[in-house]
Amino acid sequence: MQWLVLGLAVASMFGIVSQLSRPVQPGRAASRCPDRLKELKDVTRANGLNEPASEAGAAPETGTLAAVDGQGKPVQGSTVLKFRFGPERGVLIRRQTFRLPAGTNMIQAALINDFVDGQRDRVLPAEAGQVVLGFQRRSAPGTATLVACIDPDGPGAMRPGSYVGAASVSASSGPSATLSIEVSAQDRRWWLVLAFAFGGGLAGIIVKLLADRQTIGDHVEVSLNPRSWSARTWVAFAAGVTTAIYSFLTIYADDPTFSAEFGTLWRVAAETFAGTLAAKALTDLAGPAANGKRTEGGTTG
Image 1 (spheres, rainbow, N blue to C red):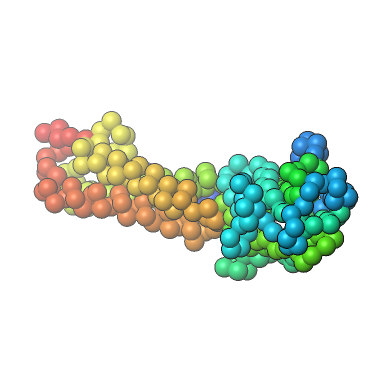
Image 2: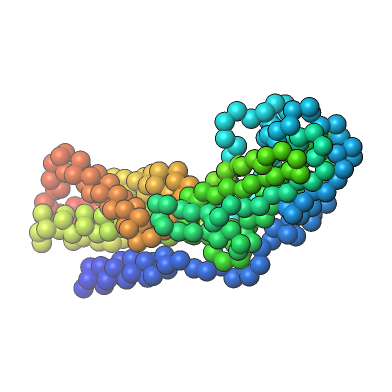
């Protein structure tokens, strides 16, 4: 009876956790980016940094708007701003400086289309306010610095995934420039991954104990009390814990776009379950358990 109850408990746990793995909408109704940008005290809105060229500083003679690196040299290839959100889901800010064409007295920026996750067919609407653009009021002479802010928790829910978007920066003189914005979001519910990982190990331990009972028959009394476990059972238990941690680190922690859906969570549980049973198979190679009247932890005679 105790095995039936324990089996039902494990099945119920997986069922409950799978229900909890459904996407949850965050309670935040507005983006934190406007307030965060105000705290910087030197950022203006993206609709324009309106200053005469003489006040902005001496612009270079070349008439192109170009992104520059930390040494003021033009960036080779495409310009990309990367945002990576883990379980903490804090507001992130990135900057990119542009060299202004001669005679520039205004510069502005705007998002291009929505942010799209092609693999999961998800969209992060550009007009939702999660992505906010602005410019620093103070920058090096002849340059302007774009500030991009993303709040993953408001408004709406940023589902886990990899999103790609773009922004256009234009000056009052010369052609505009485009930069890419890449956003990766990891599911913040890391505890779901751990629950499935250790649940798979627990299921493996149960199967191991039941298999021992079937192998030795009525001569053995299998106990769920860890104090009565044999060395063979402890090896399987240690393997389950090790595999659970390994699965968490390799499947969840190393994947910046991990989504806690039932399929991915079940993969974690299956890997831990298999690792626990693999340890059982290795201990079985050493020979069968003793046949005396015993508990699972040792022979009683």
